[in-house]
Length: 110
Image (cartoon, rainbow, N blue to C red; front, top):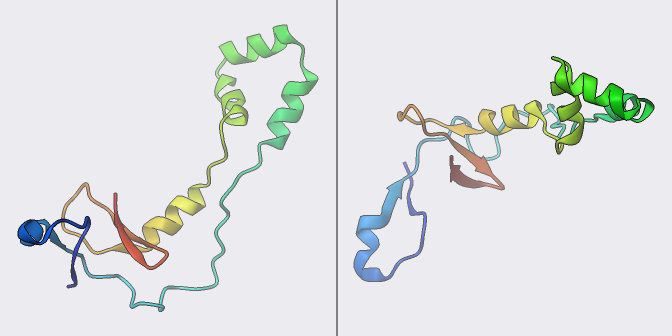
């Protein structure tokens, strides 16, 4: 394992702040290739439908179980595939609620 500090501190307290990084699942520069990451989603179809409706129809849909679909169209884009990409670069950890992954070659703890 590699030992590193997450934050730079003065020399006198450095020993207490060093954190051991978990082992990587893949060797450096040996990560799987061939899978592209889609970092956005398009809610254009939802927007087109909403734009074709009048205000009463939109309010009716919002009050129905389909209201969640309208919310998707209003929220910023998110890609589940991007989240899976981050997790696939995860480092091996033993703590249940801690995830480490590499971003731009640097380990990040979540």
